Image (cartoon, rainbow, N blue to C red):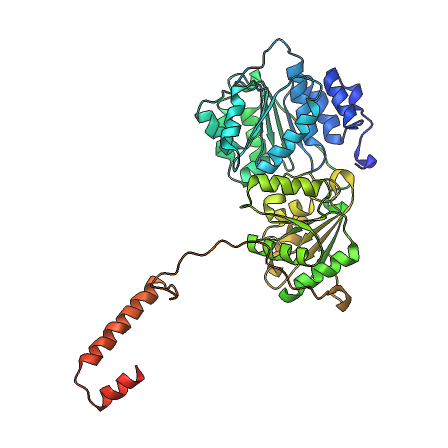
Length: 449
């Protein structure tokens, strides 16, 4: 963490319970980031808070400390099965898992119990969590609503509500689910509520006013925005130059840890296979990869076993992977906002980073929206022959799902209904012609058929 990213306010100067102070020291957290320094004094006097700060600035630690301090200051309230005291809503399972991991660090020296629920994995295992006492419930809206409707738990006893990345909740269409859950909580004046977001758009503010109790609005305007700390460069390769250029740039920059973003699963597989075939062990994640495998790959990338992570936009939000030095936009995203979130995986917590993008034949048209969104032009770089490395042919490492049997008989290609109807009409017409008495013109027709 960059020291320039911290304030002079130390955690031990705040009225935090001793077990939390010990956990902070174990994790080498000494001084607050700006969002922590502004929000924690508000939360520690049990006042609602709506905080805006850029990604990677420590919002998670702020709301975890605020909620845990409230619980630990009321030891007389028992922890019971199915009656969580804190609800933390996250838009993606990756972000929910990251929050859970950060929470685990803070409960090492106390008895607070955690539970996590998200889609795509371990349904029965997640259900069984509610058979045991739980204090802090973390999850994504869909799975949480599923279990709530099954009456596996109740929110009637919740003392704290946390909405993380509220803007993303709107973007992903979760806002009706969020409101469904908020209506199951005690009224705003009976709980401590926190809303954190990278942007505080009007729709987010309306949510804060509707479901919070006189929340204090905190906006952290960085003197050095994350995008400004990232060196951005743009190349304009032909489609068949993208793999050679990627390999050449890897050789040139020797990235310690980098994420390569693509727009589709099939492109991700192709890039990953080329990297693996050319001596660059890499992890691959996309939306349809089994959750347990995805978690394992992300952990290996986080721990440094892989230097490269090839990913679709499933990884562009909500992940905090330290020390990502380079982000490659192998495909330009459709939206400027997605571009910012992608490159925001580098330059975390005050560090610097490098974002390299390819404006190729297929996606160059997206550059206009990206530069309009970031309100600046991305500097162009020329492609020299030294940057184009002839790749070793890729080995097919990913087993493709077998296609269904073609219809219409063995080996025959499948036709659309319109094509099939035309073929039937042709066969009927041919049959009628063959039944006519032969003459010279018919003989010639039959020969041409």
